[in-house]
Image (tube, rainbow, N blue to C red; front, side, top):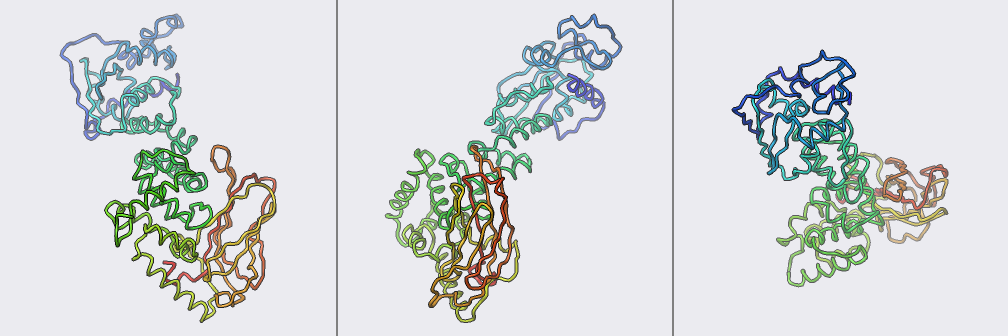
Length: 498
């Protein structure tokens, strides 16, 4: 109760300041015409000379008249029940969204919004009503009720994660800092696939930078690792654009799988009532797209009226890392989702890059510029299901060189893989590669419990050479584990990387 009283007492001092006109926009003050006696709450703001423990047995609405060494003889629970819920001794009414709250100036002035309104009328003896005109559709009577109630108690009132965005909207409108802080704390601790998108939007709207960052990082980690129909339905165009753009997106398999993720997301965006499982989703999306394109000639889906809004998102795909694989290229051609005007220059540039690599024996990238790498690296990843030794390869067709990745509980090893290279770019036995390796472990709630990265580095490989690129502490590893890699095999000056 001490914290509540200190907030209330501070309101008395602030009442002497002049009101700020911009803070009362959207509200109108309606004074009454009948005089009345000063009630107990006005006594609370003026009385400080009453002593005696005998007053402790009085009813809560009577005890508000007394302050003993600046401590009010009323519990926080009594204030909430008797004053807020029951409306005893109310000296002001708030009307909003078709509902009326019987409140008290001494508590209401803890709101920065109402403090400015009440400064000019604090000592008036007339009964008043404040009408709030609320245009924010996120605010409802439930969220307003929560914020008003929070002014009457030191304790945090109970709130579910799904209610937080609406309560935050009301708290920001009324400028109730303790509720804003409560919402921020809950949001940080309850990010999951059911809340992450609504939290991200609320954090962006009300400038909770730390919450927004956490939500975006959660999406980067989980969008492809733990796909969900419900999650994909919640991701809007702007957010998916940012995710597709980022080199920090944890990609399972290869870049063509980013394309597949965008395709099924687009299908759900256009068919929000579709209900099914993730296993069914890709087939339904392919059937829908095929049926749609059967009635369209000479243009791709993204060039159609329905597909235009998705162009900025799909443009962030790294097509240079898709068309180097025949199977992936065939998928692009059959879907007719991507305009040929996008693909033709990439086909041409990849071919010219291959010729230059063969003709001049290009070693590969020699300078790290992380800002340029953000949109250029090949993104890939895989799951390590349990403890053991695993080996696989990642390469960029004939533009790269065969690269073998080995994972053990002690380290991660990269090796220039031995194979015949007739007619390819790998005749040069010395090659450079820019890489970044990231290991991530998740708990059962899809939260990251372990993360380690090499950062971007350049390695120079001789023929068949292997190098340890990351050392691991076996005691901190848990399984299943995901390993993600970013690679760049050619110079950034080549056009296919721009």
